[in-house]
Image (tube, rainbow, N blue to C red):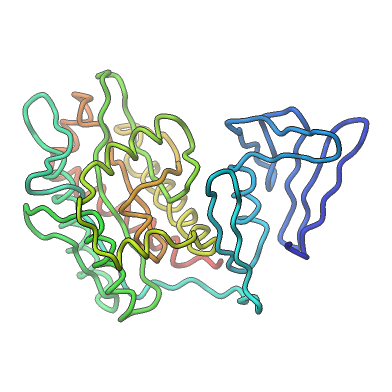
Length: 323
C-alpha cells in the first residue's frame, strides 16, 4: 500500500520495526509501548499477533502516517476499517510559513463555558487572552494577517468558527488556527495547561471527555458545506503541522508560565472546532478555572498578557522551523 514502508519482525524476540527513509519505529509483540526517534510512547492497547498477521493499535498506525511518511496521506478510521487515499504524485516537503493567524476565543454569549467559584466564566478568560494575542500580533508582526472569530461576548456555533477560518484560508495560504479555552475538574487540585491537536484517537480517556465537553454546543442544523468538510478524511500533513505547532506552543508556555501553571503536555482529541478547520490548528486549555490558585492567575490581566506573549513565541518557533 505504501511502497516506501518496510517491516521486520524477529521471530524469537518478537521485536519488530517499521522503516522508511524518514525514520523508523520499533515495537514488541504483546507490549503497549513503541519507540520513535528515541522516545518511548504508550499505547491504549497492546500490539497483537495472530498466526502470521500483526495487528497494530490505531494510535500506532497514526504515528506511522504522521511521522514516517513524507507526503500527504488522507485517512480515516471508520467502523473497524482504515480508509487511506494516497496521491498519485507525492508532494515534496517545503518550509513552513505563517501568513495569517485565526484566533478563536472559546465559548461566548449563551455558552459561558466552565466557571470558578466566584462565577467568573471561561468565555471571559478566553476572550481576554484572545484580544491580547490579537493586539500583540498586530503590533509586532504587522505583515501577518490576524483575524478574531469573535471580538465580544457573543455566541458562535462551532461549525461557524471553522468555517470562518476556512474563508481566511481561501484568501491567504499558510494559515494557522488557535483556540483558547479553560479546563475544569471535580477536584480543586487538578492543575496545569494542555495543548491539543486533532486526532480520531484521543490520548487518554480524560482527553476524550474534555473533547465531549467542548463539543457540546454543536448546532442542530449544520451547514451542509461544513458537514461535508467535517466528514472529509484527515490530512496527515495538516495533522503533522498541527502537532508541531502544539509542541512549540506547549514548550514556550511551560518556559514562561511554569511553575505557576504546570504543563500537562501535548495531547490529541477529536475537537469539533479543530476537525472543521483545514489548516494547522491547536486548542489551548490554559489552566483549570476550578483550581482556586490557577483561577486567580487566569483572571489576572497581567497574567493573560503573559499567556498571549508565550503563545506568540510558540507560533514564532513553529514558523521558523521546517517540515
